[in-house]
Image (cartoon, rainbow, N blue to C red; front, side, top):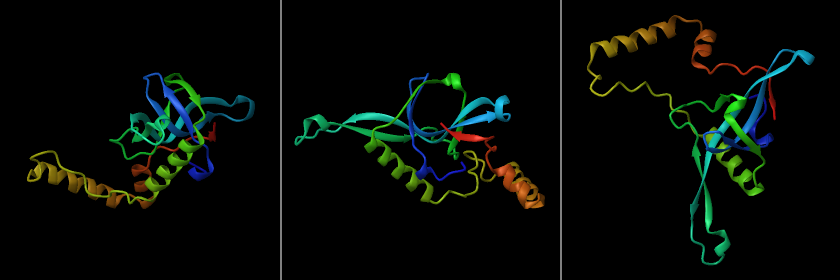
Length: 164
Protein backbone atom coordinates (compact mmCIF):
# COMPACT_ATOMS: atom_id res chain seq x y z
CA UNK A 1 0.00 0.00 0.00
CA UNK A 2 1.60 3.25 -1.06
CA UNK A 3 -0.23 5.54 1.37
CA UNK A 4 -0.64 5.35 5.12
CA UNK A 5 -3.99 3.70 5.93
CA UNK A 6 -4.94 6.59 8.20
CA UNK A 7 -5.01 8.89 5.13
CA UNK A 8 -7.37 6.62 3.18
CA UNK A 9 -11.09 6.19 3.58
CA UNK A 10 -12.49 2.76 4.30
CA UNK A 11 -15.38 1.23 2.40
CA UNK A 12 -18.12 -1.20 3.32
CA UNK A 13 -17.95 -4.15 0.93
CA UNK A 14 -20.64 -6.80 0.64
CA UNK A 15 -19.28 -9.91 -1.03
CA UNK A 16 -21.44 -12.24 -3.09
CA UNK A 17 -20.93 -14.77 -0.29
CA UNK A 18 -22.92 -12.45 1.97
CA UNK A 19 -19.96 -11.37 4.09
CA UNK A 20 -20.00 -7.70 5.09
CA UNK A 21 -16.52 -6.20 5.37
CA UNK A 22 -14.95 -2.89 6.17
CA UNK A 23 -11.68 -2.36 4.31
CA UNK A 24 -9.50 0.12 2.49
CA UNK A 25 -10.00 -0.60 -1.20
CA UNK A 26 -7.56 -0.07 -4.02
CA UNK A 27 -7.95 -0.93 -7.67
CA UNK A 28 -5.23 -2.71 -9.64
CA UNK A 29 -4.72 -1.61 -13.24
CA UNK A 30 -2.80 -3.09 -16.11
CA UNK A 31 -1.37 -0.92 -18.87
CA UNK A 32 -0.94 2.83 -19.20
CA UNK A 33 -3.20 5.79 -20.12
CA UNK A 34 -5.93 4.82 -22.63
CA UNK A 35 -4.80 1.18 -22.65
CA UNK A 36 -5.24 1.01 -18.89
CA UNK A 37 -7.62 -1.71 -17.80
CA UNK A 38 -8.84 -2.65 -14.32
CA UNK A 39 -7.69 -6.09 -13.19
CA UNK A 40 -9.12 -6.53 -9.69
CA UNK A 41 -9.56 -4.84 -6.31
CA UNK A 42 -7.23 -5.07 -3.34
CA UNK A 43 -8.75 -5.16 0.14
CA UNK A 44 -6.33 -3.78 2.73
CA UNK A 45 -6.95 -4.61 6.40
CA UNK A 46 -10.34 -6.27 5.81
CA UNK A 47 -12.48 -6.95 8.85
CA UNK A 48 -15.79 -8.77 8.82
CA UNK A 49 -18.62 -6.85 10.44
CA UNK A 50 -21.32 -8.41 12.56
CA UNK A 51 -24.01 -6.98 14.79
CA UNK A 52 -24.68 -8.24 18.28
CA UNK A 53 -27.23 -7.30 20.89
CA UNK A 54 -25.93 -5.15 23.75
CA UNK A 55 -28.87 -4.09 25.93
CA UNK A 56 -28.70 -0.39 26.79
CA UNK A 57 -31.28 0.69 29.37
CA UNK A 58 -30.42 4.41 29.11
CA UNK A 59 -30.93 4.48 25.32
CA UNK A 60 -32.86 1.47 23.95
CA UNK A 61 -32.25 2.65 20.36
CA UNK A 62 -28.54 1.88 20.85
CA UNK A 63 -29.00 -1.77 21.78
CA UNK A 64 -26.89 -3.10 18.89
CA UNK A 65 -23.11 -3.03 18.66
CA UNK A 66 -20.69 -3.82 15.84
CA UNK A 67 -18.04 -6.50 16.18
CA UNK A 68 -14.88 -6.48 14.04
CA UNK A 69 -13.39 -9.88 13.17
CA UNK A 70 -10.27 -10.37 11.07
CA UNK A 71 -11.61 -11.46 7.68
CA UNK A 72 -9.08 -14.19 6.95
CA UNK A 73 -7.85 -15.07 10.46
CA UNK A 74 -5.55 -17.88 9.32
CA UNK A 75 -3.40 -15.61 7.16
CA UNK A 76 -0.63 -13.24 8.16
CA UNK A 77 -1.46 -11.10 5.13
CA UNK A 78 -3.17 -7.73 5.46
CA UNK A 79 -3.94 -7.24 1.74
CA UNK A 80 -6.04 -9.53 -0.42
CA UNK A 81 -6.84 -9.38 -4.12
CA UNK A 82 -10.45 -10.00 -5.02
CA UNK A 83 -12.02 -10.20 -8.48
CA UNK A 84 -14.66 -7.65 -9.42
CA UNK A 85 -17.29 -10.34 -9.80
CA UNK A 86 -16.82 -11.42 -6.16
CA UNK A 87 -18.32 -8.14 -4.92
CA UNK A 88 -22.04 -7.44 -4.65
CA UNK A 89 -21.84 -3.79 -3.58
CA UNK A 90 -19.58 -1.12 -2.08
CA UNK A 91 -20.68 1.70 0.24
CA UNK A 92 -19.41 4.33 2.64
CA UNK A 93 -19.38 3.53 6.38
CA UNK A 94 -20.89 5.60 9.15
CA UNK A 95 -18.37 8.15 10.58
CA UNK A 96 -18.34 6.42 13.98
CA UNK A 97 -17.67 3.07 12.34
CA UNK A 98 -14.88 4.64 10.26
CA UNK A 99 -13.24 6.01 13.38
CA UNK A 100 -13.47 2.67 15.22
CA UNK A 101 -12.12 0.80 12.17
CA UNK A 102 -9.16 3.17 11.73
CA UNK A 103 -8.30 2.74 15.44
CA UNK A 104 -8.44 -1.05 14.94
CA UNK A 105 -6.14 -0.84 11.90
CA UNK A 106 -3.65 1.36 13.76
CA UNK A 107 -3.57 -0.99 16.75
CA UNK A 108 -3.03 -4.01 14.46
CA UNK A 109 -0.20 -2.22 12.63
CA UNK A 110 1.52 -1.41 15.94
CA UNK A 111 1.16 -4.94 17.32
CA UNK A 112 4.35 -7.00 17.14
CA UNK A 113 4.35 -9.57 14.38
CA UNK A 114 4.89 -13.18 15.32
CA UNK A 115 8.19 -14.34 13.86
CA UNK A 116 8.27 -17.67 15.66
CA UNK A 117 9.46 -20.82 13.99
CA UNK A 118 6.76 -22.85 12.23
CA UNK A 119 4.98 -25.27 14.51
CA UNK A 120 5.54 -28.91 13.64
CA UNK A 121 2.52 -31.09 13.01
CA UNK A 122 1.27 -32.91 16.08
CA UNK A 123 3.73 -35.60 17.10
CA UNK A 124 6.39 -34.50 14.57
CA UNK A 125 8.64 -32.60 17.01
CA UNK A 126 11.00 -35.56 17.34
CA UNK A 127 10.72 -36.61 13.71
CA UNK A 128 14.08 -36.57 11.92
CA UNK A 129 12.18 -35.73 8.74
CA UNK A 130 10.69 -32.55 10.28
CA UNK A 131 14.07 -31.50 11.63
CA UNK A 132 15.75 -32.12 8.25
CA UNK A 133 13.06 -30.13 6.46
CA UNK A 134 13.49 -27.18 8.82
CA UNK A 135 17.28 -27.36 8.45
CA UNK A 136 16.96 -27.41 4.63
CA UNK A 137 14.68 -24.35 4.70
CA UNK A 138 17.10 -22.46 6.94
CA UNK A 139 20.07 -23.37 4.70
CA UNK A 140 18.20 -22.31 1.57
CA UNK A 141 17.23 -18.98 3.12
CA UNK A 142 20.78 -18.40 4.39
CA UNK A 143 22.36 -19.05 0.99
CA UNK A 144 19.89 -16.78 -0.80
CA UNK A 145 20.83 -13.11 -1.33
CA UNK A 146 19.12 -10.97 1.32
CA UNK A 147 16.97 -9.04 -1.16
CA UNK A 148 15.78 -12.30 -2.79
CA UNK A 149 14.99 -13.88 0.60
CA UNK A 150 12.87 -10.86 1.48
CA UNK A 151 11.07 -11.16 -1.88
CA UNK A 152 10.31 -14.83 -1.21
CA UNK A 153 8.90 -14.05 2.24
CA UNK A 154 6.92 -10.99 1.08
CA UNK A 155 3.48 -11.02 -0.51
CA UNK A 156 3.27 -10.48 -4.26
CA UNK A 157 3.50 -6.83 -5.27
CA UNK A 158 0.36 -4.96 -6.20
CA UNK A 159 0.50 -3.48 -9.70
CA UNK A 160 -0.49 0.20 -9.98
CA UNK A 161 -2.89 0.35 -7.02
CA UNK A 162 -5.21 3.31 -6.81
CA UNK A 163 -7.67 4.21 -4.11
CA UNK A 164 -11.28 3.56 -5.15
